[in-house]
Amino acid sequence: MKPSKMMTLALAALMVALVTGCDNKPAKEPMPEVNEANCKPENIAKLKDKGTQQAFSSLCLRRTGGDFQPSPKREW
Image 1 (tube, rainbow, N blue to C red):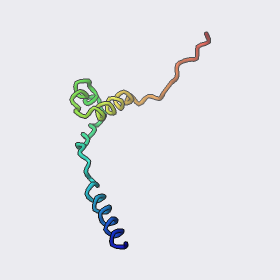
Image 2: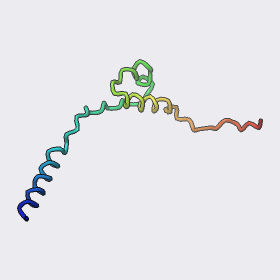
Image 3: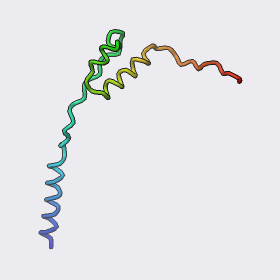
Image 4: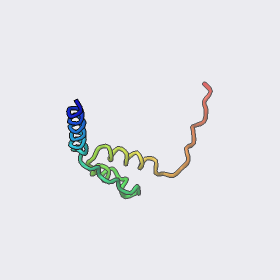
């Protein structure tokens, strides 16, 4: 009985070792520096990874550095 438990444990450990690191996703594209030149639409469009492109364009929209100022409250 013990050899089969040891064999099962050894096979499970081997499977874990073989499966670990089998991620085929390509490396993410590094995000460029947020500045006036890089935040032009044609430069944002050059980014190939769509996730990086969306995150970078979001940072470009927020780069103005101004504080958030809510609009005046309207009483209808």
